[in-house]
Amino acid sequence: MKLRKSIAMFMCLLFLCTFKVDTFAKTKLAAPKGVTVTADSQRVLSVYWNSVKGASSYCVYYSHSLHGKYHKGIKLSSTGRSLSGVKKGEKWYVKVKAFKGGTSSAFSKVVSIVIKSCPSAPKKLKATYSKSTGKVTIKWKKVSKASSYYVYCSSNKSLGYKIISDSKGMPMKFKKTSAVLKAQNFRMYEGETWHFRVTAVKDKMESKKSSSTSVKIEKDKAKCFPKLSNVPVIPNKKYTTKYSEDGTTVYYQYKVSDLTGNTVSNYDSLLQDNGWSYVDKQESDGFKIYIYSNGSKKIYIAYDDTYFIIYGSLWQ
Image (cartoon, rainbow, N blue to C red; front, side, top):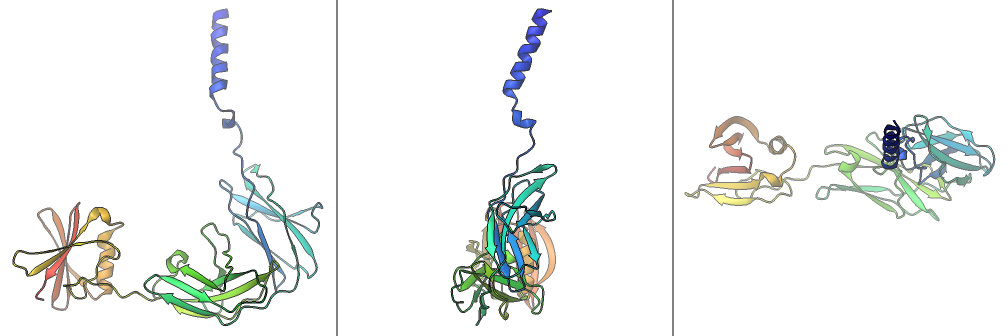
């Protein structure tokens, strides 16, 4: 009997030693970081912070005194919060807490702001788009003593402007008088016209939005194979050029391992954008072959698990 009790006690101790105590504890949430506060000409206080891993909601706490009572805002799933009705001369203290279920983080560091006059809005905006790089560049005139700028964009000139934010949802601060944006990263697509407005920030006070400037996201002219006119190459991918024994047909050969995504579907779209139409599909020697025409011209796409080949007659 004593032996059984001793064995049971030993197994229990072994379990406690090898099983992490944290398994029984609630998952800890880190305190929010990167808390930023600004106020604008409409007397609206805006607070942003970095997302916390594992958090499902957040609360912003406000006070007029650093060590006084803080008013708790509503719970939010986003990493941004606005408070309207602040007055010039007021000093506000802000802190943020993250939540998940019944678990909450510690408070973030307290940030403060004094409501002052706003700087003037930036002027002389100009936006350009580079087809070769796929980037939008916005430039504006410097605002005296401004420490940074925010850029807003919309597909509608009159309304719906949203602040340009990074992948974590934090508004992007631009220290210089220009901003360069990769269009695709901000869901600006070919054929669309986008409108931009800029604000200046001085002592955490944000100016009114500038007047707008616009730019169209244009398609880059497709680079074509040297021997087959109007037949586009697959962008930024290496290919090998080969010829038939009689020299009448040229082959452009890619390795499938070098390609990504649904290559057939993507190249089909590229061909159609350049005036080619799908005609027929065949199979030969383990290759699937797609045939396209453009007027009297024809090209062929052949692929298997190893190669993706585009070919056509040099005499057409």
